[in-house]
Length: 339
Image (cartoon, rainbow, N blue to C red; front, side, top):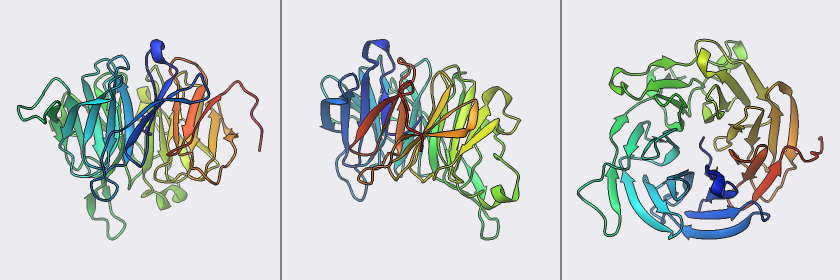
């Protein structure tokens, strides 16, 4: 899942949370102590418009390292304790919106970019040309023009920028989604040259959906078992799919809020809840088995967006929400005011 907000993945540091912001800084929080700031450092420098903006972060290597993806067209690998850049990854030609590591091998991960491509990376494949004190790494594979769509101005085929990539739990399948259409594509990482392995169905075939076909998807997520997948669409719905039955349409959808380009949604690891952030400071949570009963978890805060969300994989029901500078921690077991 891509959101610029990420809990640690191991039980040793499961309470630590990483957040990337528009200023190029990575901040670590201790969520046991009311989001006490542990450390902070600048990960990406200002290089043109939005170059320093961190769009996604992810923990790897038993939570000793962090990946950061930014508007400067690079991904960086950071040593958490020393706040030192270990490697810079080059190849994309526009801002990088999403990264997702392989489910069992932290050396391998996938990235999706507004340059309309996704790339595979292996941290063991270092370039002979290096920056002093850090490695330079280039991608091992790339799929250009990954997600195609028919433009509304006459139906010409074009490619869209990628907003989300997800390496599925089966270890072989990569899901990609873009900014101009609500279809999810699935690729076999072993046979990328053969093209897309499956093109997921449109969420709905109604006239209303046809009007929103070019809304695009803002984020993808999956549960811990790798059975359910969510796709957050700018038609203001979050669609739930069974990954084992990709030929069928969505199991259900969740609505009642506005989804903008950077609004992220995520299903909880235990597959019981779905949370979605919004750019007007409100976070929404649904129970998976009650899609039409929306709960407002965090009242609107006019001074701060809340478009980022992430569930803890080690503490069931624990949810982090926030924008660039304000992070809040919630638990589904607390008493939540209805609105």
